[in-house]
Length: 577
Image (cartoon, rainbow, N blue to C red; front, side, top):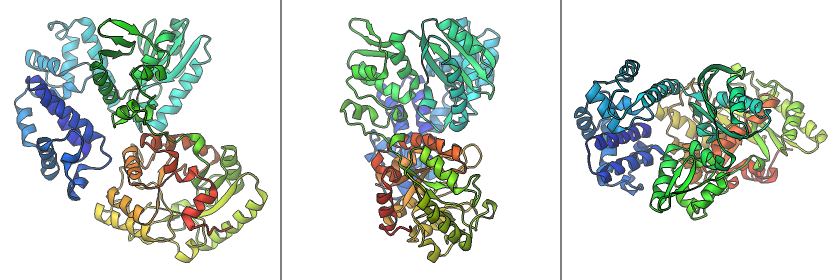
């Protein structure tokens, strides 16, 4: 059983215990356990297999540790089944709807006999929900809106698809006179790999005019809600986008509140409640005096709480709040730290541009070096290089390096890892290259044991430098290969190999929690675009976002270093010129 499944069960147990009026400390223990498990960089199953003590995890006591082990060993939890069977059917589905807490869900189930989201929608339309005690028409309409949003969120959109659409919306709105501070918040700003609804926000002297322009954009397919300061629309690709306009003085509070994540905001509010402060989208209220302070920036908001500014990408309640209170947050890697790209293709294999064009584009992107890593011949669909063509390309790179100024090309290859772990080029030819990137492209359906042995064997090859897109996933299209990443990371550490963070929006591989774990183990990572055409160098921002979500500093990123240091790490300085 995966960590996400365990976390979901613990969260539901907390909700159901709240319905039954159980001890608040017990309820909080399960909620905390859900958060801890969800954000672990390693699977509980792997930890148990290696003999680790789950009670060493923060907030995990003996009872919950035993339940985690029961879930992993058996796939079931007796206590959970008993609790679930003691309550009306369908509560879990109702609790998925924002705005419905445990007690409201229980009332809907017991008083109206509602056991599904469809039944709730029908009851709202029939006016039954509005007639419930303290649930009026407005609340019922809001619940209907949330149900519709939830159904759209079930089909989350990859970040790489959503971000360009949002940027087009914002660029059009920024042309409006008086519109300021226009930004996206939510999971998109945190650079999560998939997003649901889009939260946009800004300030303006005439917010109503901005709202009118927003709903009239050509990208808007349907207007759900329109008011003087807020509107909700469905964009042409099915994304729901909500725009909120607020006074300039409160923008920082609004942006912080809607950037999230939910766990981060809950942890922050809980911490500040103990200090007599109440946090909201409007600002910070002193409970004793009822005085509201507003903030124009997030920096000022966090500063009022006695904290460093917390970058959006790490607002996931993974310890960032405690570190910010100690002024001890790491300086995360930025675009300006990246000095080169170590995984790029040209028209020698499946790329769209010649060597010189890719070199000039990399130079224009601010890079001082570029590794040319076309596919090897074993990957027939990519028009890969056999040894003869690879040697010819190496000669072409040498000639071009004599002509280029301001950028240096490195000779490399993306070599295919065959089904048995062998590489499809000889050690003799690989030893002549500056950079050898190895990757799995075939036999993707191998079981975990075979795939893990296969990759580990490739990592043992002394000429392999970087493991590219380690899980082989394509977001929304292809699941990751079955592989024991912990074993791969240990193997990479043992052989001083580098792991890739692939910037292609449909890959984003490694993903954030795996990056976090690799960094913990002291592994070096390379943020590589896998560019196949000049414009692909712009995709570096996606890899930067993933690296920041994994708490990477520049010191963890190989290609944040000068070319001499890169080559010294990869080949001991014996570079092919």
